[in-house]
Image 1: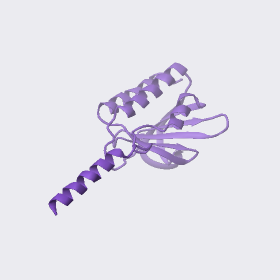
Image 2 (image 1 turned 180 degrees about the vertical axis):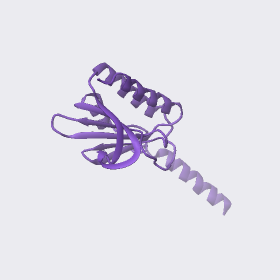
Image 3 (image 1 turned 45 degrees about the vertical axis):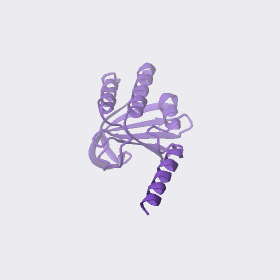
Image 4 (image 1 turned 135 degrees about the vertical axis):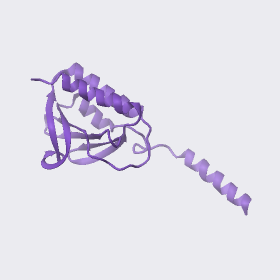
Length: 159
């Protein structure tokens, strides 16, 4: 009986290793969201508070927000965010705390891409036209890098 159990376990492990990763298994911001962030229209950055507000960003009150108009800064910010996510470990489920940051891209056609990021719980979610299209993790040192990127954007905020 032990031999059969050992063989079944070995087969199960082998089969698991043969299954290709799906987009949901990968720790990445969905490609369509990244494309929008890079050059999909007006990019707005929101600094969120720990308070609900139905008129706020995706139901959260914000302390500050602005449009990123500097294309060089936008490109560097998105590259840093994508790298921070790809360098993070896709750790298991954890409670999602109030997000720290929000991003909204509004295209010329009116379509929107939004991203919520909670560095406190290391989670992020991407939405397109109100529907969630992906989730990702930002863990370890990458949380500091992404947080610094938001601070750098705030430093060049238009007056």
